[in-house]
Image 1 (cartoon, one colour):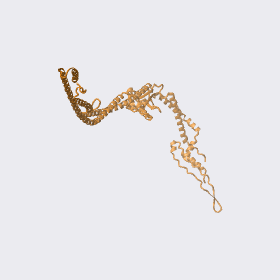
Image 2 (cartoon, rainbow, N blue to C red; image 1 turned 90 degrees about the horizontal axis):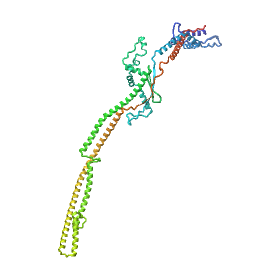
Image 3 (cartoon, rainbow, N blue to C red; image 1 turned 30 degrees about the vertical axis):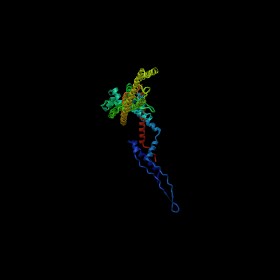
Image 4 (cartoon, rainbow, N blue to C red; image 1 turned 135 degrees about the horizontal axis):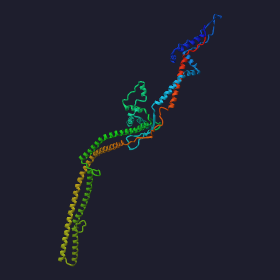
Length: 533
């Protein structure tokens, strides 16, 4: 028959199997112990011996199935049995641990407060404006007005602030390679030596100082601004201020040197290019002069070719010669007509000083002949003499007119020959102008090449001089808005009272934790009382 006491016995056996032995064990043993599952017991169906009519037995209702008991459920039941009184008992039993750990932590905090090297932190605020000062119109470096690009530039300069180049400048300026704080064995070296641990010897003072200095500086950019905060700490407050000022100055020098070196590289490239451009200009100008000399292309002050100017002047002379020829022909025709008509005495076209005097004499004689003719006879000797003189004068006038006619013909022939000569020369110069114009087309092309080479050379030369002068200008826009000042108190370690309070708190917490742990372990090792059957 099934007995209900079997369930209680199996539960007691499970608790004994779960609980560790009194001689030892831990929570890890409890967690790692695998308890075999207790098979559930199901009441079999019992058939009553009392037979029913028709040979069938009457079934009897089985008893309820016993609950299944596992190791996890037993463990949780065990933990649920812990009460506040048990916890207080555990703390009370571990009071010695609490007091001991509190004393140790307070002593350690006091020792740390007395022997730990102090840290004095100073702060310097800088404004790194990504827009450089506009000293020259065409600077070597272009500024970008986009906000993201400016922030990236500030972040880049922030990295320069803590770069090795800046730190090396600071080390050299402050001679930190001889400072025991940066190249010494360290504050914990005596304690390490006490335990037989020898610190590594310093072989490179500069590298050691660089590492120590990097540990003592922190730089960050304030959110949504160009303000950079530099944080520096040292064991001496005055030294911390000196290091901070030296870092700022070295940073400004590094930024200026970087821009100067960039400008120097540009200037060097331009100067190298200038030699080639200078040679190109000289060759282009030589080609222009050689071509002009070979083709006889002489220029004037107005920029025209000499052949063109000569042709123009010859054309003007031809026109003048034509005008003179026309005048000479007209004068000759008039004189010839007067001579042919015999009207040499009164012709206005015949003009000369001798002819004028002859005409005056002829007029006087003519008046005398007329006067004598009225008083004397036609054969009077005086009248005959006067008429003879009048004929001589008239003949002289006729000879003078013929001489004037000869001179007019000579002038006309001279004007015609001059015109022919000028025309021939003008035709020659015209052909020279055409050939010179064809040559001038090629000359202009050569001159354009020479001018372009010269303009490019002058541009590069001017730019090279500007960039060379740019090396001497500091256009970085870095301002110190808050200089470092000596702090009134150390930043680390905190005050002794705070350290002692923290040590006491940590000691109490550790002691309470150990007391609870030990009490819990003892509780789990104690077997649960087995109820009587």
